[in-house]
Amino acid sequence: MLPCANYYRPEILADELDTLFDPLWQFGALAGELAADRDFVCVDYKNTATVLQNFRGEIRAFANVCSHRFNRIQPGERGNRPLMCAYHGWSFDSTGFPHGMPRRDGFALDDRERLCLTGYEIEMCGIFVFFRKRSGGPSLREYLGAFYPLLEQIGSYFGPEIDTGTISHAANWKLLVENVLECYHCSVVHQDTFVKTLGIGRAGIEQERFDGPHSSSHFPRTATAGEARRQKALAYLDTRAFTHDSFFHIHIFPNLFISSTQGLSFYVGHALPLSATETGLRFRLFEPKLDLTRAQRAAQDLINQSGKALGRAVIDEDRAILENVQRGVELSEKPGVIGRDEIRIAAFMRAYTHLMGGGSLGGIPSIDDHVAAGDPARSIAE
Ligand code: FES
Ligand SMILES: [Fe+2]
Image (tube, rainbow, N blue to C red; front, side, top):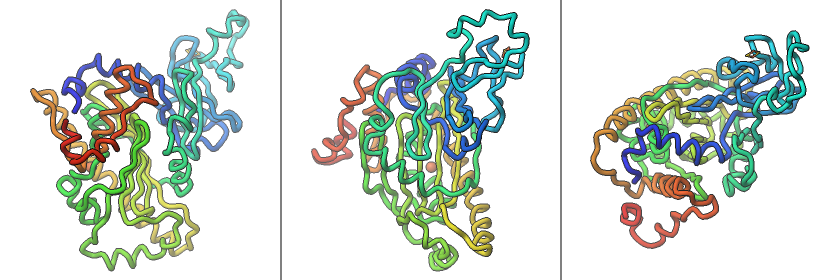
C-alpha cells in the first residue's frame, strides 16, 4: 500500500505531475470529438491547460494559454471555433504561430519562439488521441505495449455518444483509480445499480492482464432477477461486433479507464487531479456501433436514457464513498490492506512506486511473478 500522505500532500501531487504526468503519454480526446475543422477539446488539471485542435484535418496540441498575455484561448471542455484568443484577437495556426494579430506592425515578429504557443507531441491509437507535454521517450505504441492493439480494437466498437460530463470529487486522483481497478466493492456500493440491473458485482475478478503500468480484467456477470426479460429486450443488439458476458475494464496509466458492459455500452473515464484532494472525473458514455431500424432506434433511445441515469448513479455512489475515504486517509495512522480481488491495485501501486522512485518504464516489476509465487493475497500484502 502507498503511504497515506500520498493521498493528501500537495508536494506529492507536484512530484506526481512532474514524474507521472508530464513525461508520459496522456489521454486527451476521442477522434470523434476532433473530427471537423476547428473542433477542439480542452484538458484541464493542476498546472495544465491543454487544447487539442483540428486545423483542416491536422490535429495539434498546445498549452491553452495565449502567448500574448496569458488569456485562456479555448473556453469550456470542447466545441468548434478557430484557435483565437478572445482578449486581443490573436488567432493561431497549426504551428502555434499567431498568423492573425490586430495591429500586427506594433509587435516584433522575428521572435517566433516567444510568439508561438507551447506545443505538445500528439499520437493516436485508434480513436484515442494522446498528447505528451515533455517530448522524448517511448512512442505511444511502445508506451501502451499489449494494450495498444486492445485500445485500437475496442475503440472501433464505439457508436454514438450517450452522455458526457465532468463530476468533481473531493478526493485524491489515486482513490478514483483504485476504485475502478476492483469490483470487490460493487456488491456493497452498487447493489441497486450494477448488481440488480446488470448482474455485475457478485463474482470475483477474472482474466487479469498486466503490461507495464497498465492492466485490464473482466468482472463476470451473474443472472439478474429479470434475466429472461432483459435478454429479450436486448435481443436486437445480438449482432453487435463485441460481446462478452462481463464488465470488461482497462486502466491506462496513470488516469484513463475504458470499459465495456457486455459490448452493450462503452465508458471512458479520465481522472484529472485538480489539487491533492480534488479530482475531476471526466466521462463519456457510448452505445455500440450498429445499424438500427427505426423501431430499434427508438428502443435504443430508451435504453440510452436508463444507461445514462445508471452511469451517473454509479459515479455518484462511488463519489460518496471516495469522499469518505479521503477523510479516512487523512486520519489513518497505518496503510491499508489489499486482497486477491484487488490485485490490479497492487500492480498500480507497484508501477507508481517504481516510477516515482525514478525507475524506468521498462523496469516495472511484474505482478505476475507474485501471483505465480503462491498465495496472491499474501504476496500482495507483503
Ligand atoms: S492575451 Fe491573447 S491576444 Fe492578448
Ligand atoms: Fe464503483
